[in-house]
Image (cartoon, rainbow, N blue to C red; front, side, top):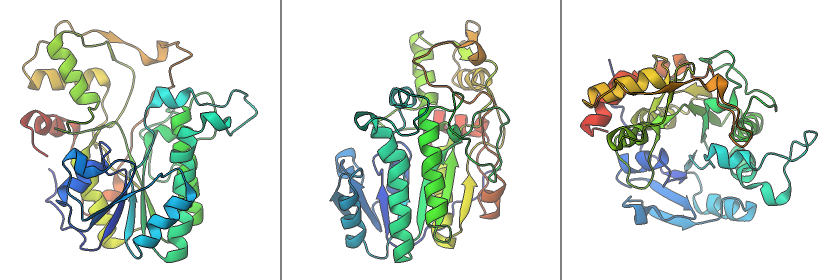
Length: 323
C-alpha cells in the first residue's frame, strides 16, 4: 500500500535540473513555492512556476558559485545530469589507461562527476544541505538489487561511462560533504505525463500502440522508479536533513518483458505478438552496457515514512494519468 503524501518542507530550495524528467515533477508539485531554479533552461518555458530563475552554465565553476551566493541558506537539490546513456558512452576515454576523457569529450564528466563535487564542497563550506540524485547504473549489474550500503563499482567494461561518471559524482559528494548531504539513487524513472521528455514506460506504450514495439529483455532485472515517489522522498529528506545514501524504486523487481506484459495488459493492448530477446546476447560496441541484474533495495526510505509504489501500481497510475 502506498503511504500518504508527506508534508513538504517550507524552506527555500535551489533546484538544478528543474526541467528534467524527474526534477520537473518536484518543481511542479510545489507550484513554484519556495523554488529557485538555476540552469540554462527557464522552467517557465515548460509551464513550471518558480519564485525565481537564475540563468547559469552548470559546467562553469564561477557561475555555480554565483548561484549559491544569490541563494544563501537555501537547500540544494541536484537533478542535473547528462542521462543519454549511449551518448555518454561516446565520451569514454580513448585509452584504457586514462580515467579522464579528452577535453572535447567531457560533457558527461563535467555534469555528472565534477558538478556534484563542486556543489558538495560549496555546500559544506556554507552549512547548506545538498540532495544529489544518482542511479543504479553506478553498479555493474552482477548482484542486484543493490542495498544502500553498496558502493559504486570501479571503472571497467561492465559499467557504462554514464554510470561511472555518476559514481564519481557520488564519491565526491560523500567525501566532501558527509554531514551535509544525501545521495538518492533511482532506477528507470517513469511518470504519467511530461510533454517535454518521454520515459521508457510511455515510449513502450506508444510503440505498442503504433505496432513498432522493440523486443523486450527476458533476462534483465530492474526496479523501475515511479517519479512521484522521488518527489515524496526529496521532501522527506529536506524536512529531516537525513544524510547518507537512499534508494527509491519499486520494491518488486521485474524484467522488461514482465513490465511490458503488465503495461500492455492493463492498457488492453494485444500481447500475443510481443517479441523477446536477451540483454546478455547484445554485442554492440557503440551501445553502453546496461546492468543485467540491477535494481535497488529500499529499506532506508521506509524509515523516512515513504513506501515506494510497486511497479504494478505505478503502471495503473500511469494509465489513469494520475501523479
